[in-house]
Length: 179
Image (cartoon, rainbow, N blue to C red):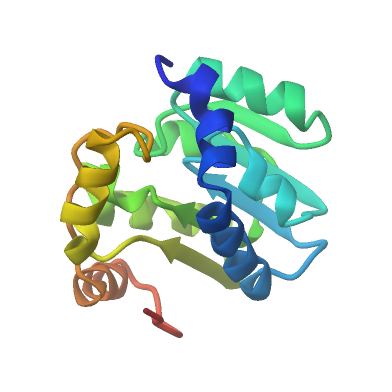
């Protein structure tokens, strides 16, 4: 909640990065799909994906207020994405895509989350996980120190193979990995 008011300012300040991230997601997500955005922030990514049904989930009430004000045609829910009961309460299922952009590093139990997502999926649902390589951490921390990046909470570092392994033991097929 503390950083909610400045979140859009940070997105604009680092517009090139955020636009490239959105462009990559738009390449993967077809417009008009049913999209669930876990860790949606202020809703800009979900809105850019142009879903027919779009649901964003974030634990920050203030961030969700901003998202609701900015994108009234989308649905935003205040919830902890690791709370399987809260996820089951989302009544617009199943989704074609579940997007987790820069969210996985904040999770306490990735496997439990992935296992709880099965209820929100159909046979062809794609889960898209966008996450930076831990080798970038020194550069990102420096950018934070000099005021060029929004302050972040400490992140867990998972390699692509770790994420793939967790997905596989959670009964998902890994279709594609990119760097």
